[in-house]
Image (cartoon, one colour):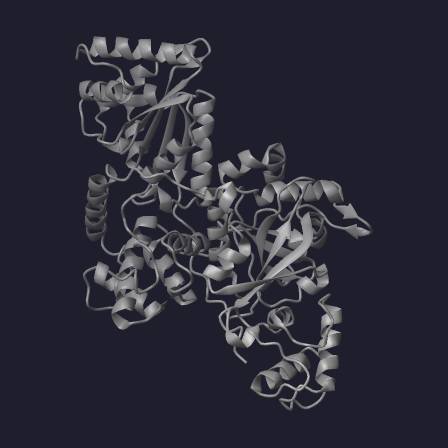
Length: 597
């Protein structure tokens, strides 16, 4: 009921497991990598566990989207069944015709099917969700299915997905044979603070947000604390907080609304700051039980295609950059090492950071999603491996956050999606996507020193190899010794100046609000508040030394010419859109404010 008020196309925080909203945290990426490896290498048994609401079912949907036509799959979502019912379900899902329903007949037909698939170069995968509910005799039947093999590998790859109780179940003495056969295990972790923020922004973007609704930093910290980083809890909390914001007619969700939503979900009307997922054990179990029951009811209906933007990953570009500057990190008298090693995880409840304050070291994804590595080729794998620490990491420089990052990420995300969907006759363009956000774009070619002086986030174009299609990333922070880039999915890396220069094409894109004031050209003879504002901004940067008068005189024109000369702009002494855009970015005027005198 509220999404239209916030400019959304659909509800962003539904608890239904819709694959379009899948967000791959570092833990989810690692789990997906384990699954793909186990299937490709025919490892047999794989066990994936995680707390209630951590996205296990959604991860299975994402896995199915990544398996090729050479893999046949059978899925079991109802784990409350007998061993015979399980065999019937498996054969039915594989499309094996039913003749007899005896255990021997079902196993014989399944074995014949698997051998035929193996001969034709195909693989077969059985996925059992909510496997912690399987009875011991059913798990033993599943173990017997793993005996279907050849001398070259397992005919059937079996994936058991369940809650932590599954590990306890497998540890039983009477199931030790099954436990010993599990070749790959992985436990999904809840989100950390940074991933929680990225998850919320990701779901808003998929729901069609153009920046119309915002969660304050304190609200995001409060959501993380009360949800404990569990996606389903985050969805429930954000949904209730948005409803409260809608009732109050506010486009900003603050900490007070989040705390009120947490108390409502806990069924309390007193106390402040008490987590609705951190109360008594009985209440917590009841809440989880109700949520799990709802999810099981709705899961069968959620079978939508997961869409994600394939693009050149940062890791591939970094690998090319490292080759360009040499493995020892040296180039043209500049001594730089490889990209920064993985930083420590963010604290569980970090304090709110004031605008313009230094960025603390935060957890950097160890690798981008698997499809990025596949697209990038072998170089990406090399770049994703641990490397020695760079001077940027060792010296801990002051990386200053730039404004406008969230809006640029929304725009870049939509641009990458439209690029994937567009045909040759209707190719998406960056200026066109910017216009849909009410922004205009200016393309410039500054040197690196000038680029790092901007106080508002911009897009930079990278092209790490000859013939590689240019790719855009967000310049989200800068320091004397390096920069920090982010892609549309929220993955970010810190690079040294030499590494960035090796991959940067030299082009940058600036964005500003489309307003009448930004379209007007200020030139000799013009008067008014806009001219005075221009003189003030030029004065802040040291180009205009006189008292602002509001009259565009020769001294103002000369100040504009010097500014244009220093920033490689057309030198005409008039302040047009390009000159204003560069000026806005240098004085730190945000994308939302740009255009106001």
